[in-house]
Image (cartoon, rainbow, N blue to C red):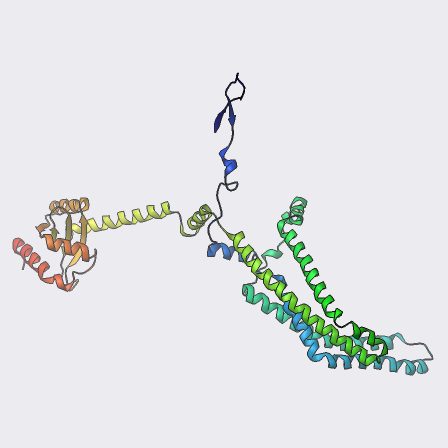
Length: 384
């Protein structure tokens, strides 16, 4: 594209500037993603591991379940921890007297093994509940359809240029902003919680150990539940954002929709050609049946319907061919060449053409009219 420019002074000479109109397009392809994603594109994205899912939802509910379990089983866990320490420290004097101050390695290993086994059994409910909660959260968000495609190694992941682009991408900036927001919210929740309970912290110096541990446990659990609830609000907002962002990323251009339709359903040109060939083959078979017809009923110029009646093959006459305009003329020409009688009956021809397809029996309401025509043709040919 060229445009003519002139100087502003008295003596000017016109000159041309060349520019490309593609610079003003919506994107590199000059197309805008204005179409909703199709089911096939969403399915392909799911196979690639691309789904609208927020990791914060599973984290929030796991955190909430953790502190709820602590609230329920806090006293039991405290008793188990106390028994572990009591059992370990109670054995120290006995072992010192028995082994003259030299503790065998096997005995130490046995004590540690029992303590670790007890702690593992104590922590097992947290791991199990955390796994179940995370699985349910992911299942509710995206359903159950596992794929290993995201785990497959790709050389593109080792590209440093792509890595730098991901680091400074809009997604990473959003994640950074979200992390800062979480720190601010959590900091506010923690500060507001302890600012109202700072007197409890000074009472810890005058309490026995068991009471101090109980007080600290209650404070931590109450704070954890508040943090979990605040985190759930952030997770809900992030889930809505991830849903909208995923839908926006999956949007398609009109050309992409057309290309996908061609790939899945076949090109319209190819389908049209196939349909045309099928119709031509059907016409050839139909025209081959005209010489076996008993009569051709005409309009006389617009419609032609060929009928055959064989009492041994069917209970009623059969329409073996029909056509309009040009096809009607071809049927009549073929009938004349093969000495098939042509009878003009305008109402009957129109009724048969409009209501009976090729290969179908004549309906009962037209029996009388068709029988009269066949009787006339049989009389001309001297048939019974």
